[in-house]
Image (cartoon, rainbow, N blue to C red; front, top):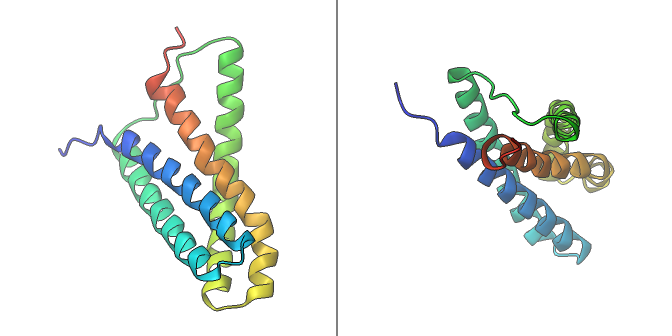
Length: 141
């Protein structure tokens, strides 16, 4: 069997990279830098796609890691985790539609979809890093 214990760490870096790219792309479009925005968004799509592949490979091979904290930490963790999972599932088709609209240069429709797609995508990317930190890096004991 191939050692895959590095995947959660790589996936967290991919999530952090996606969040950074999404912020940079939002900044670029706000400044009217359409080509830069397009390039950054293509990179965000690629990085998020790599994350999804890594996530699926890891969880196909390993059981879900349990949170070890208690009390308020536990409530906070599961609040973030549940919102993260629900928004991730909802965001995937929205991201695909928004990306296709942008790729095909349907600017008005792309903008309309992006208003609803970008915030949960950013949240999912950032909350994914928080879930990783809670599971792998912070000792709640």
